Every structure is written in C-alpha cells, then in structure tokens.
Image 1 (cartoon, rainbow, N blue to C red):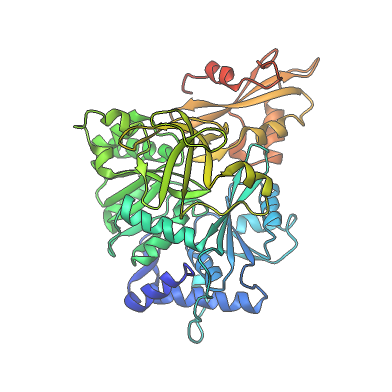
Image 2: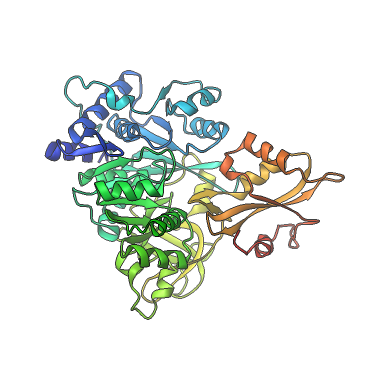
Length: 504
C-alpha cells in the first residue's frame, strides 16, 4: 500500500478541513493539499521520474516539504530527506549515493549544491502550494508494502552515512503503533513541526494526515519555545516531537513566563538521553503531556514507548527507574537482549538491544557488509547496550557505537576525527561526548599535537567548518601527550569520557 493513499482518503472524507498552516495562516485545506501534491506528481512523471526513483529534499522545515513528500510518493518515487544543516559536500555525497534524479532545496542551499550535483535542482518554499491545480487528481501509484518510500541516511562508525531503506509497510506499521502506544490523534489536533521534517518529525506526518489533523509549520527558522507556547495557546491542541534539549528549553521559557503550556496536547520526546531531573521538572510544570519513545532509523520511532501516564506517575514503587528507562516494546515489535551473535540472553542480563518486527528495515541501501553486521538471525542489532526487567521495561546503559547526541542530532566521532587528522598540527585525535546541560552532549576532541606544533583553535575550527557541518565542530580541544590505548592499539574512549564527566 502506498502511504500517500492516506492523503487521498482524508481529502475525500474531510477535504474542507484545514491541512497546512504557516504559523496561524491557513495555506491549504486537505482538498488543496491533495491537489497540489497530485499536480507535482504529474510534473515529476512528465520529467522522467519513474516509480522507485529517488528524489532528495535538502531543506529546512517549510510548508512545501509536505507537498513534496506526498507528491513524490503519489508518483511512486522514494524521498531522500537530507539534514539541511549538513555541509554541501556531505549533502552531495548522500545525493550521489542514493542516485537521486532530482533535488528539492531551499534558496540557501541551491547554489552550494549545484557544485556537488549536476542534475536538476528545484527551489522549495511556498511555490508548490501556490501552483494552480489543473484537472483531476491522479491516483497514487500502486506500491507493495516492501517497496521503498524513504531513504534515511544515518552516519556510521566508518564515517560514511548509510541509507536505511524505509518501506511503505514500515511507515504504516510505525504509524499504527503510534496510535496504539504513543497517542491517539483527534481531528482537531495540530502537528507542530518544531524538530526537522527530515528526521522524526517528518516520520510522524503520515499518521497525522490519516487522522485529518492540521500541520503547523512555524514561521521561525529555528526552534522558538515562545512561538510554540503562543501558537499552541491560540491554535491548540498541538502535538509534536521534541529532542530532550528542546524540552528543557521549553520548560525554562515557560517557567520564566509563568506559562503552563495551554494548548499543548502531547510532547513526544526521544532522539537522545533525557536527564531524569529534566523530565521530572517538565512534568511538574506542564502536567501529564509527555510520552517517551525509543527508536532509530533502522526501526523508526517504533522500538519502545513510555506512556504519558507512566512518565507522570509518582506512585509506583519503581517510578524513578522507569522514568530513567525508555519504556516497553511497542505493539509492532519484539525487543530482546542478546550477545554479539544475536543469541537472546536470559531476562535481566546486560547485552545488546535487539528488535524485530514490521517496522524494522529490510536492510541498508546497497550495503551488504553493513547488513551482515546489523541484521543477525532475524534481529536488528541496535548497537545500544541495556537490559529488560521482569515487567518488560527497557533501560539503556550505553551506546556501543560511540554516537554523540547533541541537540537531538546524532554525531559520529569518526567523521570529526577523520577531518581533524587532515590538519597539519594534529598527530592523533579521539572525539567523545561531554555532558551538557544545554545540548545533552558537547563534542570534545582530545588531540595529540604533531612534533613542534602548537594548538591553534581558530585554525582547527575553520578547518572543520570547511569540511563538515558546523554543528559537528568540537566545542573544546584538549591537548594530551598520548591517547590511552589497550594492548591492541585501540583507543580507550571510556577513560577519555571519564575525564569530561562534569556537564559543560
């Protein structure tokens, strides 16, 4: 089933309902949403986009993003959403690896991308919503559940991103699991897109389309807690996906203004470690509006959930332990703890978190080596370490892949290390995360200088900004005589993390 048929169903039953808004301004009803997405699909087919072809979206959140997503799906294509904060070189690599035939990009990216992509680039903003609709809507291309709908590029420890194949069936399963395990969506609700549509927030768009909810794209280019509070108060009830650091900023802003979150219906949080003190403070101030999810691109948003009742509960004897965990398996998956070979371990054992079920990817895009490491005996090996208790609650203990999560965005040390090692003053480097009250984690680089070299922070910063996204640049450089290593020469990052445990 093509996930775009949900837009067709909602337009037929509730076509005059407001669908896409920029702030408080209604830009399209569901009839107009379908009409413009269908018109785009006609254009794409005329331009040679065939079913299964990839179309990249390199843009910040904007109303056109939703039209582009569903227009590509109606045509039978596959969307490749790219983090708009990436360096053009990084975005260009993803576009090339996916073999995208067309790119939609915002004005700020089109010029830079043209040096890394020789195909057609279309500007995305409000132009798709302003295009006149001519003729009847075309039906969505018929797709099987196992056909790709989305390529989600997630970096790996090798430094090169891997394209997770997200199928129409996976999107269907995770969306229905949302309604069962996370939140019910009433037609009067509005999805507020505070987090990037290229990631978790966009993955939740189809289920809100299915229920005929409104889709509010903030006018502000960046996350603005005050705007969220104001718009929710006037246009609520709103639901949204927020990274833990965004929840913390929202709580601080609301408390300073004496606002209790009027109009906010549901805040789903995930994408990084949430400090227990922060979620306790948020619930104490806003009340039971929070639901935690645990997922990853390979099983998008759908591994476990901690319900709003469980997040807000202070009466259960184990409420603190549960609040520090990530909840229980969602309805479409099984979760187990296993060894390195994917063999399940006894209850209570610490090991690698494994998951299998309908939302789990069939594999990475054209990457059999990565598939062999990640998919074992029918299980997805998440790379995260944890344990399950007797009631099925999952606790994360460590991230075995060394990912740094800053502001809800995954940053892989190897990417940063490889760039720093090309600077003449660096002999060796190891990058770790340092706890940060503001961002969750800051990037810290331990550097061994080349003989005779001195630390030049400005030069290192400029070098990083020239090669990778600005948000991946280290916040701090710590000069060290030698990196701690084991007998096999592997850097002992645990020792380095211990050196930077005080939150910055």
